[in-house]
Length: 116
Image (cartoon, rainbow, N blue to C red; front, side, top):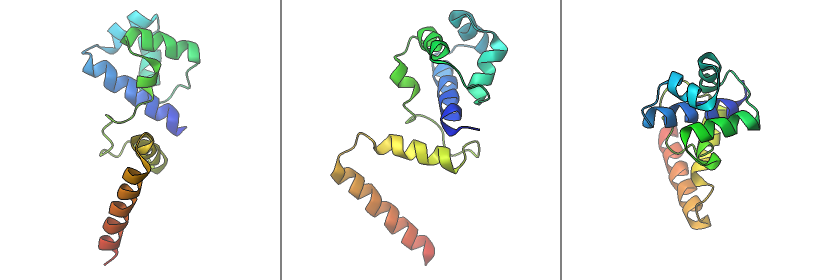
């Protein structure tokens, strides 16, 4: 399964829940079948740009929000290593070089502590 598809689907689900919408309500707003939207949220469906636009309109969000993974709960076992790396990359993408170096130094210290 494609990592980005899974991350986007999870983010759509999180945003929908934050807006207190059911799958049925969002599907109706988007003009999609509820079962199709459920597949999108699970990451089972590789959606088109047109479908993504329908979902962002239904959520009343800018498309960039769908690709912002900062709010995802990555503590659960749902995400595999490649998705977790994408989330980490997203978290540091807009940070300064100094901040990225700080994160790298902290990560290195943590890894060294675990090796001891």
